[in-house]
Image (tube, rainbow, N blue to C red; front, side, top):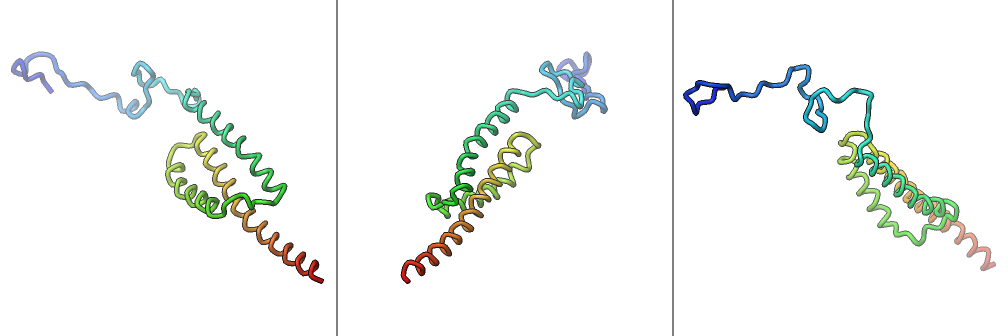
Length: 142
């Protein structure tokens, strides 16, 4: 494409495309292509923040899971809330797993597993508690 302001005479204002071998390759901070080397991963601040938040969130939920498993008492948790949490996590999975693999995948997988465990334990331990309280009632009435 020629610069038409001077009648088509003069320097071309058209920017040549990158070489086909470089098209689609990432650039460095200065816009240079080819700075990326496969296998030479650099950890950026957002990735580090994602890793740190994943560890913090998982560590904050672990005591709840350990106590629920140890005591088998989930009466303080709303079954409706646990069910909605599972539904929300399932729907959110469509978004999360469409993204590149990273700390968010790990965090979301932990959320999926922990909310599923809470629901399973809630159903199981409530059923066990119902059987136990029924047999205790019969024993006390005799």
